[in-house]
Length: 327
Image (cartoon, rainbow, N blue to C red; front, side, top):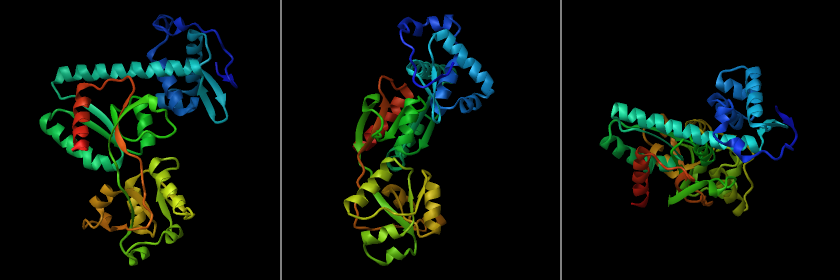
């Protein structure tokens, strides 16, 4: 059952977490529920994800705790959290589902003779200048391969990697995650610039004054993301107040739309700005704004989960991106 407050259960023997759990009645659906609770932190949201009712999820949770003879969840202010026993089970469950996914992938490749499948995540700039050329090489050499790519900020991507939803990530390790959870090979720096609409008042100057920037609305990545923090640090280092009006979004499409239709300013990867600016389309009605404030962001790299080997198809794409980054 769910315990209120911190769990006081002790003395659960290590052997309770071995293969005997399945002999005791632990099922795959039990593991799915634990992962859903870990992801959503609410029983109702976990139940909805699995397509079952909340009472059914609560009964399954009680079954798990009976099998483990240990509390799995505890109530907190905003929902539930896994206890250390629940966390241990969730960690192993992710590995189990990862191995099952890899088994399915390998069997499918053997059946179809296809080139396999790869799932990667990447921040925007490296996706354009590294991942796309590497993907082009892979699909040319292995036309049967299936490649899934998610473009997001590093905070999201590294958590997706830990959840075994990606084979590897091109990005940065966030400050709030332990580097021990990952292996990272640095491959480059991502240049950042500011963009505005064509005809923006600040374009009248060759270089925009730093003091003028906070007077306009800004479109930022969500709070806590690395690019957002880099811009905020640049403002503070220059002794400039932070913008008062901020729109938060991780969508580059929405960012470009807001910038194109307002006087808002947005920091984006220079590769993105160069791809879009002045390209003859409505989306290209943006310009790069030169400013006195340099924006520095730490190097990005190829990130894999510690202790998790890449399947052959993912290793192929990984090596090609690495080669592109070091060219």
